[in-house]
Amino acid sequence: MRILVWHVHGSWMTAFVQGSHTYLLPVVDDRGPDGRGRARTWDWPAGAVEVPVADLREAEFDVVVLQRPGELGLVEQWTGRRPGRDVPALYIEHDAPRAGASDSVHPLSDQDRIPVVHVTQFNRTYWDNGRARTRLLDHGVVDPGYRYTGGSESVAVVVNEPVRRHRVAGTDLVLHLAGDLPVTVHGMGVTELARQVEGTPAGKNLSVLEDLPQARMHEVLGTHRAYLHPYRWTSLGLSLIEAMMLGLPVLALPATAAPEAVPPTAGVLSSDPDVLLATARRWMADPDEARTIGRAAREHALARFGIERFLADADELLKEAVS
Image (cartoon, rainbow, N blue to C red; front, top):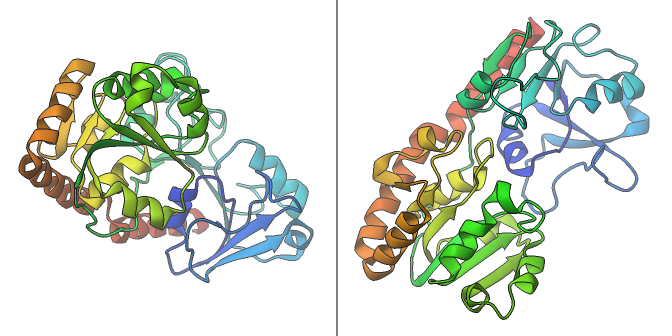
């Protein structure tokens, strides 16, 4: 198939474009959010093809995969075709609902032409989907390989903009652990966090690595003893799955989809920050336990979130859409 799709979430798209289709990626002049084109920090296959916006009206495609409400208008504006009417469409919902469980109405809830495809069962259940047809496409991740050495007695975190997203991202939990143990935060906007905590007890143990290319980040993550997924409210961070595939034992809050993604053999989930801290301390002192749990995490992640299963499920949804 020829699929029109926007580069929105880099890790998800890295998995999606591994299929056997041609993926048409809109490009705008400044490569802003409405047209980033191909990724620059991920290695995507040749089937991911950039298409300038000016060429989209003449472009041929079989289905459009939407990921943001505004893309409905962009498709009609740039191609002259209405998703769900003139061209088959799917809407991938990446996020957990932002409001409460009882009043989270999905933006596509008042139509039944475009299926809403959720990336976790938690999202599918907690969104009010109205009369929209819903489907599930559980996450998939390209296996980065077993990279774990655990030689650094430190905890790794991956989070973008930890200052702006403080409570949502669990930045306070990161700093709680950093008050006692070395913690390295990877991602975009992490330098601002380091500046903010400079001179504090947490600042002494906190180090940051700003926006590393994916391959390099995987290499570095594998050197840490453990991985912390501190999010209070998120769909299901793909960095958590990647860390498990790398072979890291994980610590997390039992929030949103995390309890379904991390079995007891793969790490520790607790609402008590002191339990997470005590577990991290134990793994620092017992590298053999950390390694054993990390191997179990990798085994589970490969079975549950393997790329082959993901692409097969995606193909079924695409076939259903065009039929």
